[in-house]
Each structure stands twice: as C-alpha cells, then as structure tokens.
Length: 211
Image (cartoon, rainbow, N blue to C red):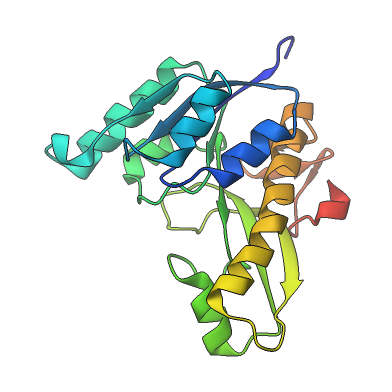
C-alpha cells in the first residue's frame, strides 16, 4: 500500500495492550477504538492519543448479532484494514466475523490451543504446566480457534499465583502484539486463505525472535 496500514481496535478493559501498540510507534494509522463498555479504560487511552472512539451498550440491541453488526459497522466505516481485538471480552457473531476473515487478529493469554476462553492463568496452574504463554491468532467464528501466528512463552515459577503469572505474561503480550502488527504493516505477514510469512505458508507459530 502507498499509505500506512489503517488499524482499528476493540477492547473491553483498561487497554494495556492498546497502550503498548500506541507506544510502539508502528508505521500504522489508528482510525478507531471501540468498546462494549462506556467506561473502559481503553477508550481513555485512545482519547489521550487522539484516536476516535465509539462505545455501544449491548443491552440497547435486541440480539447479540444486532449489537455486533452495529459495532463492526463502525469499524468498517472507519476504513480499517486490520482489526485488533485487544482484550475484547465478547464472543462475536459468526456471520459478522466472517466478513473480517484474514483482517482481524486477537491476543489471548495462553499457549493456544490450550485454555481457550476465560481464566487461562488459573487453568495453567491447576494443570501443573511448566510454562505459560500468550498467542496472537487470526480471528474466526471458533472461540480462540483461528490460526495462531505467534506466541510468547514464560516459565511457571514456584509459588506463582494467578496474579503473578498474569503480570509477568502481560509484559510479553505487550511485546508480542505490536510485533505481529508490525509484521502485517510491513507485508511480511499476510492472509491468503491462510497465514503467509515472508512469502511462505506459516507452519508453526512465530516467536518474538522471528518477527
């Protein structure tokens, strides 16, 4: 493209991954940050950075699909080339997601396909795993089930709690997500019916040293 990659983001929480994306000073243009929560910290992060925002309340819509269509309609209207789900906590209607195949990524706090959904740190500890991690994957209708493109790993330490594990992993998430977006912006990572990296089909998740 002869212009920066246009990026929109959806977030439900405080927006730490969004803040990491902004702080990375990537060669992209942030065109919108949306949320399902009017008081989400991510909206404040976006406003401070001069990024347009929108928030919609799910209860204002008759169905989940109606809400999703409305919110993703704002994303489409922003002209975004890439949608980043950065701590967006809602399951999106399958038909709405389908329209963004290959153009939406999500960061998830586990080594997918392990521990989809919520409480990933607890599940990791209860399973007695020796390592934990974060994954960035392309979004599909399957919850946390799209093709994984990159992962970061950390050891589980003796005495780790959900809180300590989450805090240490978040540091890696804040590196991993900007690195993936940078790879997409540069054209190294793209979607052609599947993930392509440096001209070849991606056969395993990339690490930070690969990006």
